[in-house]
Length: 315
Image 1 (cartoon, rainbow, N blue to C red):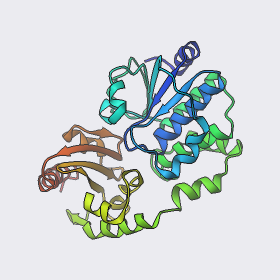
Image 2: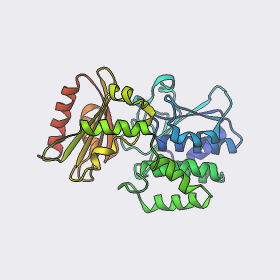
Image 3: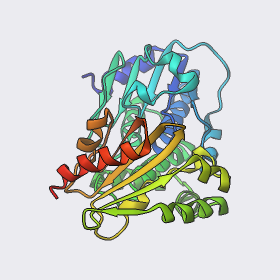
Image 4: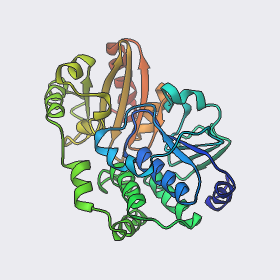
């Protein structure tokens, strides 16, 4: 695997970059993409971020920092994208032509010509921070805000087990760059639209417990979203609901994408590996946060995943 120093040499020699994010973009893929984009632009290069889905409203303030002109790409980078299955829509055309992938998922499928994975990093933004430092680009307030969004969201505001001392050191450096910490944290963690509260009320009604309350499952249907007016890009954070319940080791969120197709998010406590559950269905992710897509009947899905979870928690 090439080092970040090797990658910095390559980036200095190239131009016209497209930076790709994953579908249902979260704070880390968006934050790391726009931070890298702005850094490349500060180097005098043309760079542009591409998202297959609309960016959630709470992240649009960082997207403004790196608006770029239209051009044909000559070097394609993906950030925080473990597999080409995470490309969707217009980005599918690039799934076989990614030149560089920068990621922190241990389940990365090595689909790019050059892949840099650091599974010890709490977020892809940590890696981009290190790369920008090596590139010699000064991290200004705009770049720092992007990187902080990635760090804060992928660590649950620094409360998940993936947080390291290095994570806090990077966050401290970003704060020293002058970011509006209070405002950003309020946007990310303390503000919800009323329609999302309405959806959460319906979600709690769907909650079911299994295995002496060690497993909790919630369901988000298309009908629930239509009834409340919640859009797809507002669902980030919903998957944390079942795991947050006292005594729950495995939290499962089943989200209906379209008729017969479901996106399943698995969140676990440290003694249960979420990846080992999701790999049974062709998915992947992190030790405590993973997911997969299922096609079929929701009752079959519930039965199959409960069977796997029963084995993993040794009921």
